[in-house]
Structure formats: C-alpha cells, structure tokens
Length: 423
Image (cartoon, rainbow, N blue to C red):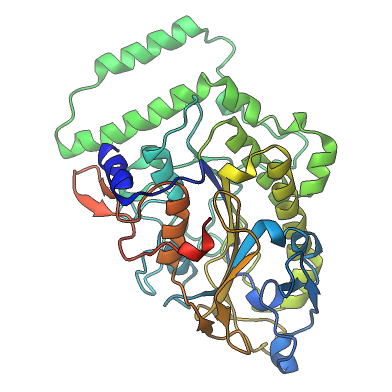
C-alpha cells in the first residue's frame, strides 16, 4: 500500500472520487437501442425504438430511457469501446471488469484471476469507518444457469479476504434483512471477545503453503468480526428505514432496490458496491431473442428508474462529486437483427455511461460508424476504461501489488486513462 501511495504521488494522480458504484448489465446491453441509436440506418439495423433528446444538445438516447436522458448533463458516454472476446460471457466479463483479456478462455472464477476493482480499492484505500470495503449484490452471477460463478467480481490473487461481502437476498422483499450481521442474542460482548482471543492463541506463524490458506481464513474471520461489531453496516442494510417515496423512485424490484442498497452502503463508508444485473449470463441483457420486447417491457424501464434515481439521490445528498457511477456490460449487441427479433453478441463496438467522481459531465467520447458496428473515432479498450476508473479513485494503472506468495503484478499497465473524460 505504501508503494501504491508513492506511485500515486510520483504520477501526480489527482483523486476525484472516494467510492465507486458499478452497475454491471451482465449479458451485454444493446448499445444500438439505448445510447447509440442509428435512426438513418436500414430497418434491419436501426430496430424498433426511436431516439429522444437528452439534456445535452445533439446527444440522443433510446425512447425507453426518458429519465436517464434528463441526467445526461451530469453524465458522460463512451461510444467506442471494443475488445477481442465475442463468445464467452465469462471471458468478456473478466476483460471488462479487470482490463485483462484472456481470449475466449471462459470458465468460472479462479484464485489466480486478477482482482476486482472493488477488491483493489478496498485494499489501497480502506474505509475510514468500521464497514466492509466492498459489497456485491444481488447475485453471484453464473456463467449460464447452474454454471460456475463468473470471474471479475472476486479478490483473485489478492486472496479471499479481498472478496466482497455478498448480499444475496432480495432487497425488495418485505422480510429483507441480514441476520448474519447481528450477534446471536445469547452471545454477549465478553464471550465474543473471549472467543476471538482464543482463536488468536491457536493460530500459528505463517510460513508453509498450508499456512497461506490459513492466512486467508484469518482475513475472512477478521472481516466477520468487523461486520458483527459495526453499527454502520447494520444500519446500512436497513433499507426498510428508507423513505418510501425514494424506494418507489428506484423501482420496487430486485435491481432497483439493490442500487438503492448500494447507495446506502457507500453512504455508510464502503468504498465500492457492484450490482450484477443477472442471476446468470443468459437471464437478462443477453437478448438473442425478443430483444425489443424484453428491453421495452422490463429491462429499460427498470434501469431508467434505478439510474436516474441514483444520480438524483447522490446529487441531492452532496455525494455525486465524490462517488463514481459506472453503468456498463461486457459487450454490446449486433447491428443486424436476427431472425428471432434479437441481437447477438457484439464485442467490436459498444457503449457505457459514467458519472460523478471527476467525470466530465455532458461529454461523449468516441463514436461508432453508421451502423454501430465499429468505432469510427477514439476507440478505447476495457483496459483504458478500468484505468480511467482507477485514475478517478487515485490509483495509478501501473500500481504494483503482490499476491499471497509475494509475487508482484501490475494492475493494468497497458491501460491509459481517458484524459478527456475527466475533469
């Protein structure tokens, strides 16, 4: 951590954000129907939706994002993102969230993966209050129903203590709660501390490979102790205490309430919150069939409510200037509509939104060609996007971190922060 601080000082990195809320549209949202419409393209490309004006002259959104359109003056778009992974969701998610492209090598999360943004942020900039640094909700997204957990959300080679706190209950449920954050009524603080001291006495000095695993367990136990004794965290999950009008604005569904809960976690002092918008990679934004019906009737209205409410809420609370909001998926959708009225995977060009935390408001970076198939100006890669996120958070992309075996690695050394995006 000291080395990272020295690197930050040498590079002159200006920290513009203290926390990050990442809304990950797992499955691949259609840029052509949301943020980069092509109304002059042939019907088989432009699709069914009409463009609408935003609060930035000349910038249009799809007609089913009217609330978000009214926040464009607070946000920025990238319309020229691209990478090399088109088939495997897991590999594309990993690339999008870490900046490391491992080709079409899918599969689940591995302990050798590069760490999530929240894991790095929680380590290098730990909270100044007794709260969990990194939270993820409402799903551990699977690579297909019944498949393994997708990579990119975990601590990876930083170790399990850097994994997020997973909130895997529906915050929209009437009985939502986190009983695991509360000590058993018959366990008073004296007994609790005695148990903690006993475990500390039983631990042996680390050294062997087996002891490395024990170190991981020690870190997980330490996180559990902190959660059980943290009033801030216990209050943060009490979403039932939120103003009902605010809850309504976010949307009374699992995703809208997860975004609201993420705001509550950040307000309590957590550094990062990640919402993965799918129980599995094929469940929501992977619209190979019925793209327009699913977007119109379900996905876009929910997203529109959640993100517009989040930006309003953060602004009203004076939090937006220091909270970086990122809304993105692992790739976009194909320009040509398929026979099932859907759009297929498209890694060659896609869009995403960023706001707050030092992001230049009302700005559009890059452009796609006439059919949204390839970048036509200022192409960027996931490594550049991740480097930009880190730059806002005061972490240089070439920061060197060491894994549990003391081996050094750089975060995303080939990523270049997008200077035009930042204030």
